[in-house]
Length: 412
Image 1 (cartoon, one colour):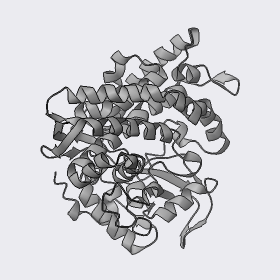
Image 2 (cartoon, one colour):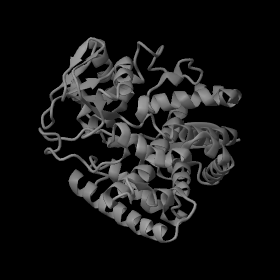
Image 3 (tube, one colour):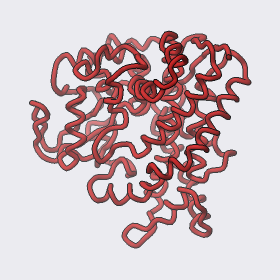
Image 4 (cartoon, one colour):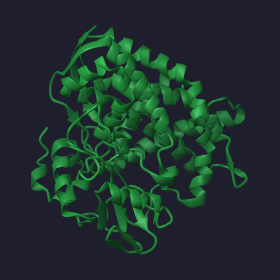
């Protein structure tokens, strides 16, 4: 899919949704930016100027100095010379800092801890086998991204929240529009109309759910959030809905993207597919390599609170900084042969796809468990795998996923 990325100044790859849809072109441009050394100054039409951190060490430094770089008020890239017209987006856990972030994160922390996840391992394995068998019983040629790729992470996070299975399709549809609002093929006409509509429909769904759960609590996570008290009161509607949207949308879409991206990587690299089949003990490491390779979350933003030296670059108080995770995960200073997909890679776990510091992804272990369960079942059932047409990726600057993944396969 040609995005004409070569006509863009390299630093504009961070502001162009279509640039992210040209995966190889994007990475080639990012490599040129890394070669310059240090932070990259980005002054793109329609955006407030910002710095882009493209090196692994710079992102790690910024994220671990959360007292010097805040997520609020704009944790993701927004357009407009005044950063979205000066109006911050609705706050959720991602846009909180310090004590506020710790308090709201603690509401769900136990649900993503090792003990609770280990207790649910059997459930994850059962779901993984169910969807692999569903895949295996279908046609030998199919669009993996359209169905199978999303099924496991969607059903698991939905069941965690207490969302009934008959609502899975609705949740996924809203999520696709939410993260694909910049893509004309996925949006409702334009980005603002799409986001306003999706958030309104998501919020109506979750407020109805919260009202029911406050009247009659159940043992699921949405009930915990609906009945949580901060400062002696329930979460206000806007914050409650934003919290549940974050968990339901990001909680399945990013994992689904990595799962689908892993199938794509194995299809494009049959030697690696065969290595995994013959050496299943490599699977945990292969999962880290797949996560590094795909990196579904493309960036987060930070605002400098004080003047700070970032490995030789002075960032002034008030400056905006983009943390480019896909660039960090191809950083030549950290990863040997970073453009090689290698399931035996010794440095795979150094990736920053889950971030680092206080905002380290709370669902990282759940994501790993789901990916491991799926690929363990997948590798046992599939003998041969290959692409069956052109792959298309969504045009999005924040979370980019697959529009399709045509594959064909032969079963054992």
